[in-house]
Length: 390
Image (spheres, rainbow, N blue to C red):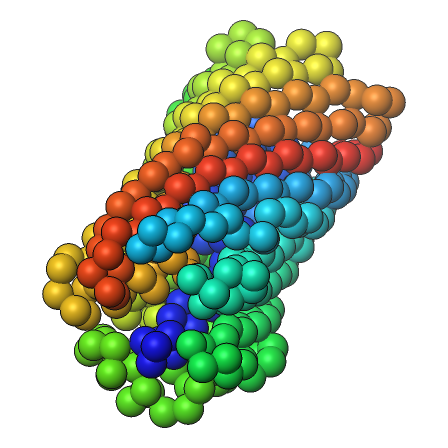
């Protein structure tokens, strides 16, 4: 049972999210349209997606809301099938934007980007592992309209993270150093170009944000050499770096309809921590359509991103990494369908609703003991938001 020590390394990760460890879209409108927003103007919530688009603000706008997130993780590890008890989480979100003059606008976004983990404390076959990762970001933004068609935006990002890992080994020993936290700094760049009055293209770049959680991964139970008996030759650190990403989007208005397409690339293979676990870069595709009339809108969307976690093969090192990823970090969800609805409640106050339904994805790899490890992952989330503008 010495192998249990290295299983703790991966429990640092969150199952809060849907594209790897990121939510699909931010805000009810974006989430109701499959997570688009790089080229689609939604209002203040664009400060969280593409800061350049807040240049389209016409006054002051304040958005606030929350997402109820409910994943279902079922794992069969060598014949023992168990469900994770971490089944719900509430994620807050606040954003605002203000037009200063014809050229300049500013905004700020504050939102939870992770907040859940895996809980197998009642299942010895799953090492009684419990994890909890919380990430919160604050992003003040500024947008400048270079000319009537072209705008640029910039947002420094402050990220707070807290991580807690606990598990029990085969001898009944409790491991876990308690919660560790850290602050990280990054930035976002955005651009928006109106091709004509009805169509737009957008670009966005998000820098990596390095985070270090002392004694949570490599030194959770002492020196890194404790991982060697299980056959792990990959070097692990206490760093978990949020990866850089970049994307392009297109939006078309056609009468009362809006159609949008986004593509994003997430560089997991270059991020500290994730690259040690063998994660691959991820391509994310989002499609959305919205119909709006008389202050009420309806939307549908689709989002697909292949899981960044590959089958690492049949070598001892590969099977150890398979166990780390698929048992303790099964971020394997790939396909999502979305619905949205919004309406004006008063002249200045609007309501937004969105539902994101994740289809079940099943994977089967070999675990560290050369047994079958099957992971079934599905998830649903529901967003409620309010928008106030004048």
